[in-house]
Length: 77
Image (tube, one colour):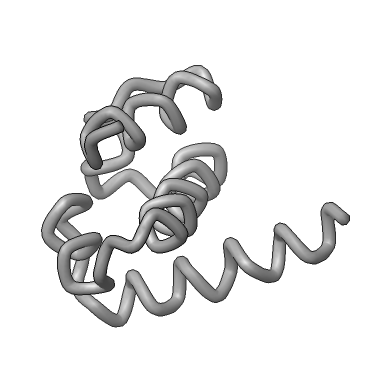
């Protein structure tokens, strides 16, 4: 699965489109999906820098998103 396909898959699971995850919208449903995409990309071996490029976010946003996604994953079980 390519990086773009993974992003599209996460977006679709959340009822969104891939462009939503790349945009600047900060609605909670989009932010959660974006963070989940970051987590799944990282688990697939994608570097933080590449995730930053793919989602058009600065590196600090990627670090934060990965941390939040990890916290949510732990809380969910």
